[in-house]
Image (tube, rainbow, N blue to C red; front, side):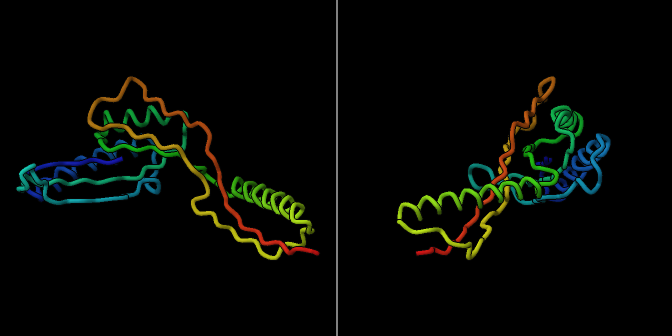
Length: 181
C-alpha cells in the first residue's frame, strides 16, 4: 500500500508525503498491524513532467508492505486503510505463514512423479531403473499467490471482498537415476 503527493516543489511534495504516510502508518497500527509487519518497499521524490516535457511540479511516493494475518478481515482492513488512512496505491497478495511443510509435501510428490516418469521411460527403452544418483531442487519462490490490484483514490465499496481461494505450492526437482542393463 502506498501514498503519493504532487506539489510545486520537491520539498513541499516530500513534506506532504510525510504527512500522508504518517496518517497511513498510524491507521495501520490502530488496526493492529505490528511495527515488524510494516516495511518501506519503495520511496521516490522527483520531477513531474507535463505532456510538453517541461517540469510542472514534483511527485513523491512511498510504498509500504503491510502484513495482515487475518484473511477473514482483510477487506475491512483495506477499506479502513483507504478511507481513513489515505492509502492510494494498493496491491494485495497472499502467502503461507509457514510454507515449509507444504513445500516438503510438494517436494515428496515431485520426486515420486519423477520416479514414475523415469520408470515409464526406462520400461519403454527396455532397461531397468537403477538407484538415484542425484537430486536437485530447482524451485524458486515455492508458491504462486493470487494478486489483486485496487484502483486508489476513490472511496472503497461498503465492504471490499478479498477472496483467498487456494494457494498453489510448487516445487521443481531434477532427479538423475542409474540405468541397470
